[in-house]
Amino acid sequence: MNKTIFEITKMDCPSEENLIRMKLEGISGIANLDFDIANRKLTVFHSGEIDQIEKSVIELNLGGKKISTEQTDQTEFKENANQKKLLWSVFAINFAFFIIEMTTGIISKSMGLVADSLDMLADSFVYGISLIAVGGTVIKKKRIAKLAGYFQISLAIIGFVEVLRRFFGNEKIPNFSTMIIISIFALIANGICLYILQKSKSKEEAHMKASMIFTSNDVIINLGVIIAGILVNWLSSSKPDLIIGTIVFILVIQGAFRILKLSK
Image (cartoon, rainbow, N blue to C red; front, side, top):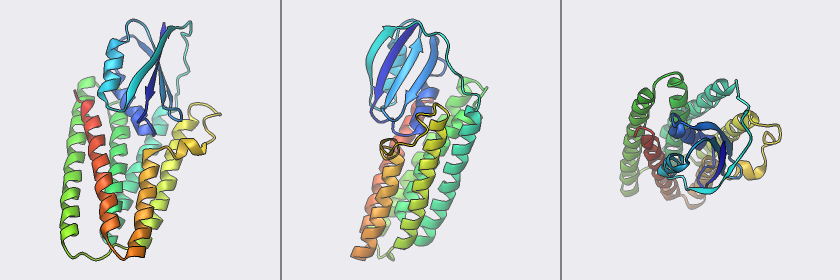
């Protein structure tokens, strides 16, 4: 048995962990995957060569880089019987906030909230693909990933068009208080999701360290929308909201391409 450690610089929330799991699923020789999100490390226990595993990790464009490979005597690994239940929990939280942020974003005329709702939807797709295809074939999972990826790209493009229309039009200023309040709740929801999935691994990791929470890309987006809301009120302008919306739409499209890589 060999143990190979990867550094994954862009693995900063549980949805990236699931992307990697799905990408590596089906590769013969892999005995276990051990994720350390806080330190952005992945340890792969495997037999045989590492070439195919390394290629798959790099293809996801998450900044994957092999650190080391060494032999190990470890052959037994803890299996988490509650993994499916945990995935359902984080799927439900992310999908619920997709609906909440999309609805409040449209009502408050905030593109930042609309864009963040799509980011929540992107995470929902990742968890959903894992759940729907459990026990199914690799082909089924790839088809679902392809549909999810293209759907996400389509929504993001529609969002970009709306941002341009509002930028050059004479739109009302977004409701800054709604932006801030909903983003704070979304921030809490992301923290809960991270806590739920980290809790399943070890008691030590369950202590939601600040470094673990605030390195999450999702949390940074939430903070960005909150700051945009403050600037909207301070400057009496919709431009900060449109800027954060554009940034998040770009991140959503990047996430969609990662999902599409699962379909190859």
